[in-house]
Amino acid sequence: MTKITDLGVIETLEGLKSKEFSSEEVVSEYLKLIQSDSKLNAYIHFNGEKSLLEAKKSDQRRANNNSLPLDGLPIAVKDIFCVAGEKTSACSKILENFIPDYESTVTSKLWQAGGIYIGKTSMDEFAMGSSNETSYFGEVINPWSSDGDALVPGGSSGGSASAVAAKMAPIALGTDTGGSIRQPASFCGAVGIKPTYGRCSRWGIIAFASSLDQAGPITRSVKDSAVILQNMAGFDTMDSTSADIKVPDFINSCSKPIKGMKIGIPEEYRLDGLANDVQNVWESGIKWLKEAGAEIIDVTLPHTKYALPTYYIVAPAEASANLARYDGVKYGYRSENIKDLEDMYSQTRAEGFGAEVKRRILIGTYVLSAGYYDAYYLRAQKVRTKIVEDFTMAFNKCDAILTPTTPTGAFKIGEKNIDPVTMYMNDVFTVPASLAGLPAISIPSGLDAKGCPLGLQLIGKGFDEETIFSIGSILEESANFKNI
Image (cartoon, rainbow, N blue to C red; front, side, top):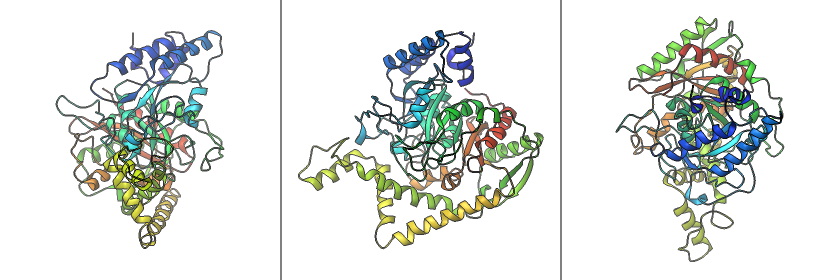
């Protein structure tokens, strides 16, 4: 018999429906793995008593023929989503003991659909990082690491990607600001989708950069992601940026043919020095889509080279404003070594924030300051508009765009910590879609020279997740990627 923890979302729900096993059994199996994990550090909190209680309620609903769409499915949650009554810290010392009495809209939707909270996954502090090394609770390890050669899982949703890849959760929630779902999904051999900005509510998610942040699932298959997104998306009056647009049938889109679709290949993504293994996987993806009847065309995104510097002006600027609320006054950490009010602010923030968060706050404060606002922030916003226009022009010719997800596979812990710019380069392929607010998905499609996963990224038109689910399903079937 297949182990319960080897099953993805759909297989788990089918097993529960056929009463092959109970929700209590499923949750118990995952809790055993979470409790026994001494290597990956993927989870930072869990509440077994609460999870098992909800599992019993789920089993009772099934017994009464009142089951819900996701009834009994364990769901791991990135530590940036507020879950009522559970510690929610964004993996920062400054929020180490914060327990919200309210629930994020996204998690609330999943619990209302019968999903069961299984624990909080680690992340880069305040979602600022590409390797999950900035977490206050310690670095997370990629399950693909070999003995004595610890690899990063990617970031900032590294704990979620690591948990899914290690089969410690059938699905984990993440957030994506500049690639924080897609990049770790690629590094860990999972599927990760960033929906269109506004598709999922941001209410109850600890803010990093408000014009970029978007919630999405990390799963073991494309169809699993479609099932979860179907249940977490939708309009929310609590979020002014939430789009009042009907949620289409993502699940059925996974089985639609792609014959006749036009897939764009942007020349600007063929970077000098792009690793051969990444290039080879990209070429394989192009071949697979051709074989499925798609037409491959060249497109141009001329402002791509400005995307990364634009992102690292816009995102820190918004972060500096969003993180100003953490000052030791109403909640969170407060320094004990204080003389007066101003000293309380400075000491609390100096002790409560990690180095990367401080770096980005300082960058953001600088680009918003008098004398520099026009030169940096205003100019970055103008370039962002040009990037949006590039995609609009490209999508006049094609239905979706295919690129690598990352310029390399997973790297060693500590390998890129010395130079922040080297670390930021991990986001070079994911940031443009974030700046444009477009949906993008990473599909595990091959291995690098070290035998670690590489993903292919599909970027779609705004609010057209259906197309990237259709094309992504073809890539997934063709790649036939085998997880660990």
